[in-house]
Length: 417
Ligand code: HEM
Image 1: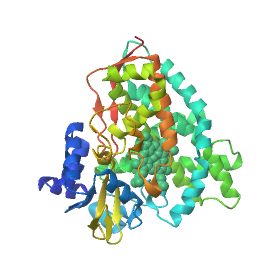
Image 2: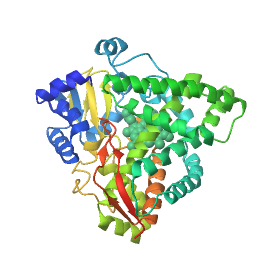
Image 3: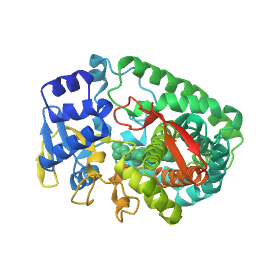
């Protein structure tokens, strides 16, 4: 939503405006209280700014509804130019066509089928050993008993190294991809301040130039990485267009980077503060997969996504007019008491934690969900097995992003006992 509209809405006490304002400034308790309030108003809250859905049923239905589109959420160029919120079209922008996130059927169906083949469960299973190896190396480099920032020394490094494996990036160029990933990830956050927007666009342009050369190298000499597979499929004549291959690489970098950093950081913060849950995980390591789902439910790396109603439609029994911007509160669905008893309690043994909607739902369901779950479980388990006590120090700071939610710094002392 444009910042001016949000500010105006927030001043007028509009719940949708308050929600967006709260997302970057509010404490967790305030944010989740507001989501409870919005959910309490009914399945769809119609606001001056559009609409909000915050119950589990309404979020699921919205994301599955063919009358509610993802691509249309992005306002047309003429509007963006007027509010000064966009520069040129960039193939690599994660919320602009031909990004998977910004196209709808039939283009989305064809494109998604081709990309899914490459991101299959088998492909993720093959990355598992390598992910473990990377986590072991990173954990071994964390000094025991000394203060340090776990985002910089651990959470940020694990996902980018895995993404480099996927994109076939040679080890010497990984630090560059880390820089670009850090700079490009906020591009998922609509409503960025203008200066920040320019910085992100310039990072995407740099990534674009680097990627053009990298794809040429892979075409000449394909490796066994996933991007090489997309390029090779292209040459067989059955694959993606050049723009789609580039856009997929950009989306993997933007959508797979900060989100996973947030999962790891949010998980460390929750578990470090909760010795009882840590003890449970020590006794029953089989609970780690469930713990990752509970972390995703309780403190989701993506708070909200956006949609637009392209015609009048019904969501969870409520009528919604055409042309409404819909804020789809994934974080609200995850705290719905009709689905999750005692929703504000963090409990790694919760038996339906997997029903969270932090990866979305429907046709745009996160392509990297199995990869992210695998990285989360290996990453957190490896850290807490080596350091059973992680003591948080003052100075933890959330990133100033709105839609993405996670820590920018997490000062802590990791102890072996
Ligand atoms: C889509 C969350 C990790 C690639 C999505 C969506 C969400 C999401 C909520 C749907 C957005 C919408 O419907 O508007 C997350 C979270 C992650 C994560 C919480 C980590 C904890 C990853 C990773 C990758 C990835 C590691 C890459 C390998 C994608 C792609 C889409 C997507 C390509 C678009 C799918 C489509 O539109 O068809 N993600 N994601 N994500 N994610 Fe993830």
